[in-house]
Length: 317
Image 1: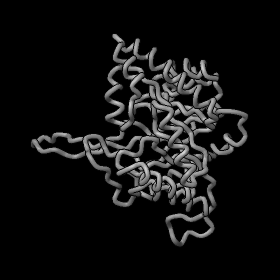
Image 2: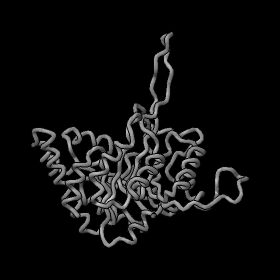
Image 3: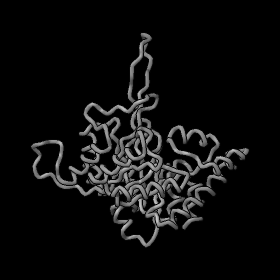
Image 4: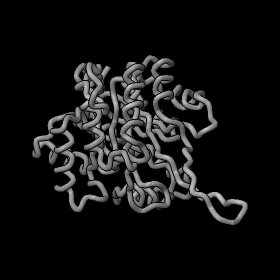
């Protein structure tokens, strides 16, 4: 079922989760171990992130170095198929621009369609680690808008090969990212909003946001979207704060603000266990407020902390 169909048929706020693929060499059981404690909440769907390959330099016998490409985590196609088969639940794979050619993207979409996966979240993706700027694949997409268009083309039976006639029409429901505190590369929120509106006008079916810790920023973002004619569902992305380091790492990495009240309480903590307690309670209150405000879905970035998410959702539903 499509994400938008889940939302349309819901009697209230839905729950969804987002997971990382396991590191290369790990089994699918690591995914099941992560998700099993969360299945009691009957999530409507599970998102599976995608991480581009990284470049490393390996020393040769003559002392020179070779630049090699390493992918530390497997792709999403197999993981999404396994999740759907194991739990009988919809899976939403992430598609990213970085590191992929248009042909590789098309082949992935064909595989997803064969598997009966109806949803994708299209993202530009980040620059590789240790690199400052995003660089597209030579035969790939530079912007999420272009990737979105490729998915829409396939929904209309248009493939990369010009002479391919009678190609089936796929039926992907397409999600895109939104940034309540603006994308860090956008000069201002209004410019970022204009790009988001283009993605929605171009065919995006729903928006899922970057994490945030201040609900007011989310509510202001939703209001701004509506003022700009963006009417699709907007899903808040939520993450627990569990370590003191995150107080500085998350703002630097994800360009999000930490509310003063939250930061003050975290700075009082003596251990990360204390921080986890503070972060869990904060996320519970965030979630309750978002649910009361009628958010269509509460989307939790689990990212290795299923026990925290379990506590939060237990207190919210």
